[in-house]
Length: 296
Image: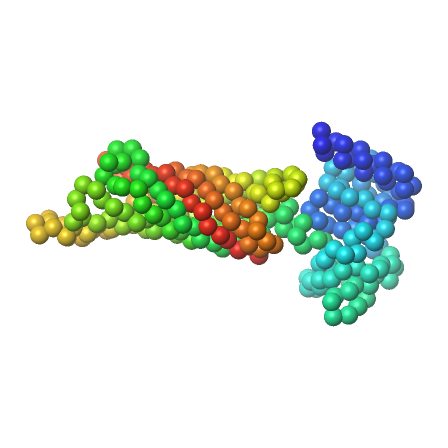
């Protein structure tokens, strides 16, 4: 319903400006079109900008402004034909000549035929997500299932890196985690667990379109699958095997959220269930984690 009213509002604004007077169009992903609306209906909008016509779904139009004055104070990025990017604020533009851009070090004119794309970087990142994200978490886990009485709750530390896939909302990454263990059945026997798991993550990016505090939150769900190295050290004098290392299949799934602190810094919290498959009794745990990440 909210989207329907937004579309109707955009259509009404376009028509009340007699269509050709509207010359600054902002799409929901932050893309800016400077030019004229040539045709519009409930399904699609045709925009003429710097000698090119672009057709986009009307439902993806976020703002339709009669002049560029309202975005003059917004920092924008301009992608040129050679894929280089220039940042600054728009002072003026001419359909045939190009853009007059204030870069902070002075004003430059960018020819119209060299402009490939204009966008608001923060809004584009909010819509598509970061290209790359790196971070670390500190967590507290508890063993469940058949081994719940053998291990006391303890700490987990993890680091990860993920990248954006071509599909909006989908990310892939690699998680490295170390589990501190406290084997309660025998104090002279020590275990440690190191896991390496690739993962896929789906982030509900449209959640950022909500108002106020919630616009900083991005909920997500994830699935991990990889291996875990379980190391055992038996310090007893009569130990049959003093040390042993075992590689086990390891899987985890869960949900969480990223809270945006600044343009690149986020706080990530999550809850997950993990299982390490053994021949007889499987190692299972549930974990609550929190940490920070940096996105670019």
